[in-house]
Amino acid sequence: MTAIFATAEDAENAFYDAIARADLDALMAVWADDEEIVCIHPTGQRLQGAAAIRESWRGIFAGNPRFTVRVAHSVRWSGMLLAVHSVVETLYAGDATTPQGSLLATNVLQRGASGWRLLAHHASAAGEDGHDEAGDGVPRTLH
Image 1 (cartoon, one colour):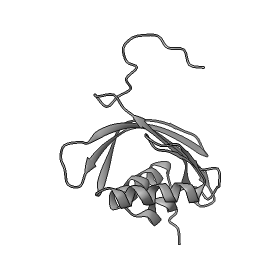
Image 2 (spheres, rainbow, N blue to C red):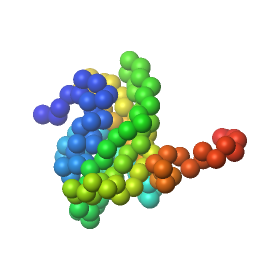
Image 3 (tube, rainbow, N blue to C red):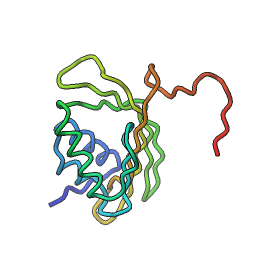
Image 4 (cartoon, one colour):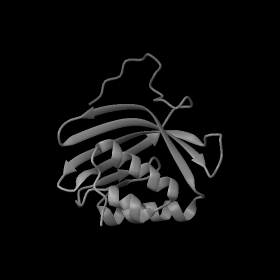
């Protein structure tokens, strides 16, 4: 039986725990049962649907040593049915105490009949200090 996550934070924690254990089934159990789910890796293309996301993570787990993701600097917006978490992910390979790098990630979670589930995970490269590189004081216009 698939776990029911009582909070968006529980689902997000289960996602990162599954990554640390390289447990593909546990990782996929966090995702919503919806073909519109989306995962964007920092060096990859936009993956849509459970099959594409599963195969991507299968390749990551097969080609890399175990790694841990520590989440910090979380900014969260939560409603009754939807939560958006913007986080800094710091990556550690194996038992290393020195980080391998940082990513900026956004997790979108939705509450449904089976609890909270992940709808989207989007990770991008972070600047050297682990934060967005656009912090140079130059105004930027989006869209």
